[in-house]
Amino acid sequence: FFNSNKHTELATPVELSLIFMLSLFDYFRINVATQGNKKSKVVPMAWATLLGCPIVIGGYVVLLKMQTQTSPFDNYLNTVPLSFIATEFALSVPAMIAFQKKS
Image (cartoon, rainbow, N blue to C red; front, side, top):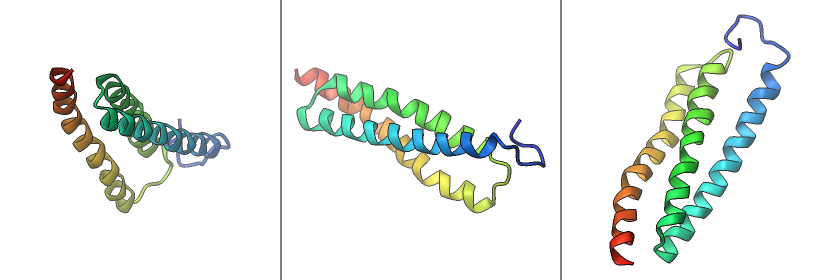
């Protein structure tokens, strides 16, 4: 649909809305995770982890696949936030377990 040789009229608004939604979800995810870390609560940490899933799927993977043209630099540039989110997922699960044992 978006990977054709012609850039459709719908492609730019959809890409811009995905970028806006990505930044909005990321903002909420970081705020919820911060509250979970400060208060040592499991529920905000779980919500932050769940908010990370649409960011990864909808934001980075779909946005890269839907763009009409991508350069190799785009792929390298998008591995940075994906690696940070993967590290966050890997560290949030043991933190949630530790918070659960603590309470």
